[in-house]
Image (tube, rainbow, N blue to C red; front, top):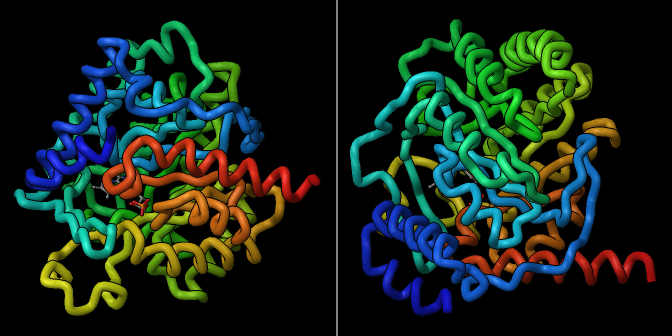
Amino acid sequence: MYGLARSLLFRLDAERAHDLGLKSLDLAWRSGLNPLLATVPAPLPVDAFGLNFKNPVGMAAGLDKNGDYIDALAALGFGAIEIGTTTPRPQAGNPKPRMFRLREHDAVINRLGFNNDGVDVLVRNVEASKLKRVGGDTVLGINIGKNKDTPNEQAAQDYLHCFGRVYPLADYVTVNVSSPNTAGLRELQEENALKALLEAVFNAREKLATRHGRRVPVLVKIAPDLSDDDIDAAARVLGDLSVDGVIAGNTTVDRLSIEGHPLAGEAGGLSGRPLYGRATSVLRRMRSRLPASVPLVGVGGILSGADAVGKMTAGAALVQFYTGMIYRGPGLIGECVEALRQRREGASG
Ligand SMILES: Cc1cc2nc3c(=O)[nH]c(=O)nc-3n(C[C@H](O)[C@H](O)[C@H](O)COP(=O)(O)O)c2cc1C
């Protein structure tokens, strides 16, 4: 089924295909046709950050930036969906074209630049979702960032604004300091900057937890382009501050793996298959540097069940993908869950 949809969507510009794909998915869900798109996998429960996931396979941030499609995406069988990145104020993002498919590599380059409708719209969408109104068994993560025109010295205010707005609605919140398309954002991963930002977020959480009677886990999403020393420094801060989890990681600005491709010169973050090796080594190093109590989410280049297993072997407790949805469609969710089930049964058998 997805093969046919894919051959039609791939005739369009990548961003138009993305919008049309999501609108069609939503229409299918509203018409009750979503079982045609994906077979919902049998449960494979996992606990992480104090949350219960029905399976370890999640949708990565950026696919549904405003939470417009929460219920349609949840119906596909993901254990978790992460919406956002959201920012305090709406922003248009970079000029188009800003998303490119590299089919020969099962890859995408994007420089969207946190195009989104702002956190107030996202909050309204979450409130209106069936997942929140009626309840459901899909974990909802909300990924927060800063506006493009907010200088880094004031970045904490943007994160705190979004954090306070989404706190009552999120199962977990991701602090995104790793997108390559907002100038200077990744500098927030530097040891002192990261410490200052996270201390501000954790202080805010103390008050919010008292007010709402619930302590929402906070995850940090890191870039795959960190050097070994940067990873070690970030791990020290994350471990010292007892972050609830780490997502490794975002898209890469490195082009070595696609050298010679006509689109290699396009600015932005590269995702998909060429990212797998690097993202998995960063994950492995983070695992070796962080206390065992901090679960990791492995993201970057998952295009098959075997790739998901590889992330777990490198130390992930959960996995996510985005580009895999473009190249493989919703069937990849079940494929990953089944591969992880076999791994678990192999380990216990
Ligand atoms: C078009 C596009 C937009 C993205 N937007 C975001 C975003 O807003 N926030 C974020 O944290 N990550 C974003 N990402 C990164 C993905 O969440 C993921 O970390 C990355 O693509 C690597 O995983 P993949 O190889 O499975 O795609 C985006 C990725 C793509 C391809």
